[in-house]
Image (cartoon, rainbow, N blue to C red; front, side, top):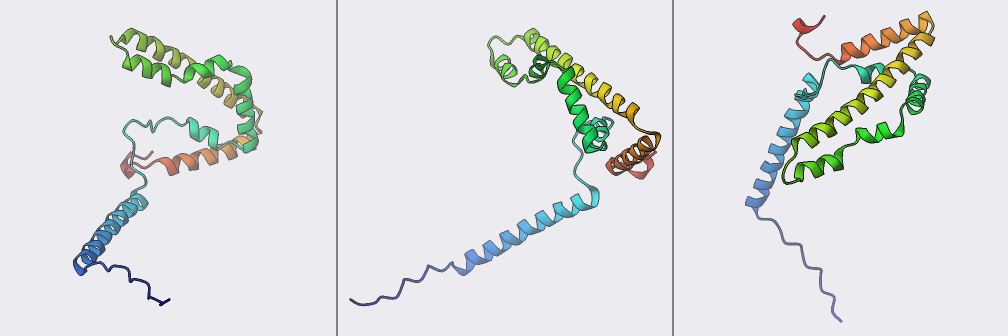
Length: 163
C-alpha cells in the first residue's frame, strides 16, 4: 500500500482574493461608521415612539421591592379577562384577512383593546401613587433624583430643546 499525500485544497485565484478583501474592508467601514454614529449620537429615534411618555422610567427607577409590589397590585386589581383583551393579534389578523373587510369590526376590537389597556394603565398609576405615598420624604427625594437623572440621560434633543 502506498502512502499518497493528501490533496491540497484548491487555492483562490488572486482576483477573487482581492475582491474578497475589498468586500470585507467595505463591510467593516460601513459597520464602523454606523457604530460611530450610534456611539456619538445615540440610537436612532423611532418615528412613532413617544418621547413624552415616561411610564417605563417611572417604574424602572423604583426599587426592586417597590416594582414587585406594583406587579402584585396589578395582578390583584386587574381581572385576567382584561389582560387577555389586551392581546388582539390573532383576532386582528383574521379581521384584516376577511373578505369583505369589515372596518367596524376592527374598530370594535381596537376599542376593546384600548379600554383594557386603560384599565391596566390606571391600575399601574394607582399602584405607583400608593407606593409614593408610602415613601418617606427622604425616599421620595431620592426617587425624584433618580428619576431626574434618568430623564436627563434619556433626552437626546439639541441643546436648545432642553429645559
